[in-house]
Amino acid sequence: MTDSLEFYAAPGQMTDPGALAHLLADLPADIPSLVRVVQGLMVHIFWAGRYGLKLDETRQQEVQIRPLAAKLERIVELDPRPLTEPRDLENRLVGNCRDFSVLFAGLLRAQGIPARARCRFGRYFLPDHYEDHWVGEVWNAVERRWVLVDAQLDALQQEVLKQPFDPLDVPRDQFITGGRAWQLCRGGAADPDAFGIADMHGLWFVRGNLVRDVAALNKMELLPWDVWGIAHVEGGDEALAPEDLAALDEIAALTAGDAAGFTRIQGLYESDERWRVPAIITSFTSTGPIDVPLVT
Image 1 (cartoon, rainbow, N blue to C red):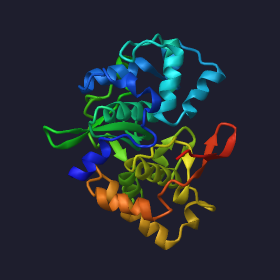
Image 2 (cartoon, rainbow, N blue to C red):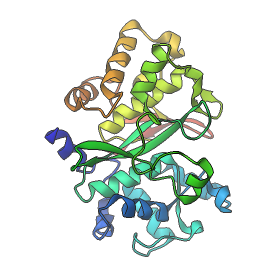
Image 3 (cartoon, rainbow, N blue to C red):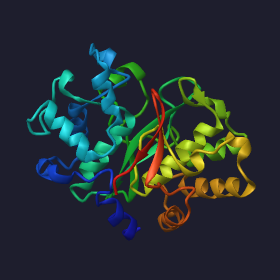
Image 4 (cartoon, helix red, strand yellow):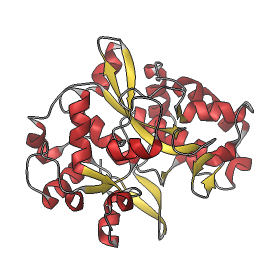
């Protein structure tokens, strides 16, 4: 466990603050205060209308920003005040659940606190549905466990959703890992079509989230519409070879809970191109798929 905690206490490629690391020097370390900081810096693209905020196309494109360093650049471009000062809605960075989770994890890692972003499915958005969603995880040293934290859910969202739990300690039966979702669907305990978002759903969607979660566990937290490796198979689920299904089953078992099998997960990620993020990925943007080179 010690090695994994040290790994998650340090920034990765997507959570390195870069030249703006000095902006993170005076941030609070307690989770409630840090979540308020995150919420004061960002607005969710799909919730903007609920706040009375209308986003033009240029602002909506901020959801394409992958690394924390670039997010911080845009945040201070919109409002140069210290990060602890909440922005007016129109001056907050536009993002989605992945971005709230990556920002949360990045701010914790900057303080040497073990944290992760997880790609999964939330059960608290629509009845009988597993919504495509990301949340953060932080290591609670006192309780010796990983705690799920949904940094996106501010007071307005909590009032609308009326979720029956504390978003700073999300129950694991309310946020289903990509690995657990794969197990449920493969075992016939859940309908694959109940997993997804909008008109996108099915086992292929679960497979994509499983691959993105594996990458996130290796500190490569990419966008929800980025694909590579076994997440992007010509011919879909029917084209998966038996050895591919076996590999998916194995890594699903390793990542179904709090990913305690860190060494094995990391080893598979580093040695198997089905999981490892390559130098060029495919991103399914609103205008169609594009190849995106990742700076390493």
